Amino acid sequence: MAVGFSAVGLRSAPGSPVPCARRTWRGIAWSTWLALALVSAPAGAQSNNVRITKLSDVAFGSLANLGVDASSAQSICVYANTSGDRYRVTATGSAPGSAFALTSGASLLPYEVQWSASSGQSSGFQLSPNVPQTGLVSSATQQTCNSGPVTSASLILLLRATALSSARAGSYSGTLTLIIGAD
Amino acid sequence: MHPFWMDLAGGRLVKRGPETVDKKIKLYRGLVACAATLATLGAPGSAQASTQGSLGSTSTGSVSISASVPSRVRISGLSDVAFTNVDPSADVSNAQNVCVWSNTSTQGYRLTATGSGASNAFTLANAALTVPYTVEWSGSSGQTSGTALTAGSALTGLTSSATNSNCASGPSASASLIVKIGASSLQTMNASTSYTGTLTLLVAPE
Image 1: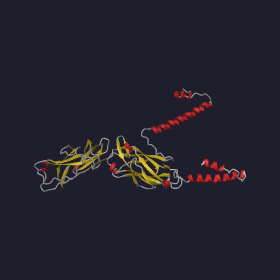
Image 2: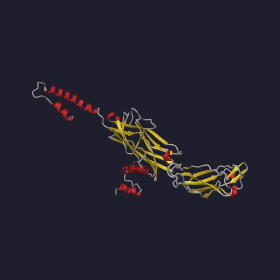
Image 3: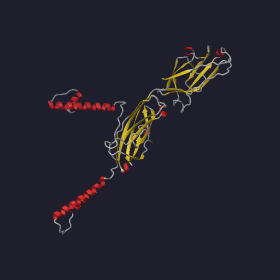
Image 4: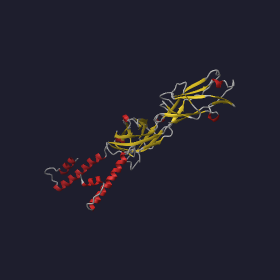
């Protein structure tokens, strides 16, 4: 773009009857128009940038009733400046093999991860460790949801009764990592 | 070694002019703040905070998850016991496999049995007529004898092999309950008379 700008701006036909100053101003006008035209096109293109924010830690606390599922849902912000605002999400747990499981010493407490591309949901489709879920669309209009929708997706974590009823007593912890990519 | 570090290591502040002292105080404060931050971050068992993603071709965030599972036990798989038309000349016995699950680190539990007789006695009754029975317990399934229980007294030091709270998976049973009526007791019973009672089993984590 810079090369085109200078070439058009300074070009004048040899022997032209147009005075030098006038030719210069005309050149500047053309070059300005061309520059704006060239610059305006990329401004409307997608940068393929994504961002995930508004994540909160999940504390299930002491699970008194091991015979029922325990769940936690949170609305988060996923922004995608991509074609169609599309994105993909990949989740990994901190247990061996990136499994979705909390640990307490050698004991494991598996959990499930669900995702919804809408905020305020208490269920979604199930994610598998290290398997990208594609075809998601974000409604966020600002990268941290500071304007427009305040959240754009739901993250749901589930501790199934079947897992709880086999779990050893103890304090379990783990980390869930979420990677957002353009889709 | 730089004089400041010598001062720090020596735990004293040497006055070399107001400016020097001010700088050192600021550095000390900074070090204290850094140490506090590092102590917080490195404290054993401290929960990691969630991390937010930054703008880019990919964006990574994380959440810390925690849950606490309290000590729990469960007894299941119990069946009623019926001694029908028994021969009073010999002891009668009924053994059944039951599921006892404990989620403690040792899978340990204690068992307390109480009968429906007077003072929780192990007795069957028909109005004022009573007949005693005995209760035995084994921490393994498939047993026809075990440790004799005393009404209201806990049998401790038991360990469960169950891996599921109702033995739906893993071992299908983890203990044996044996109820017996001795011949001498049977011979005190009136014929064609039904004696009934309830045996209550209380399991607690250990």
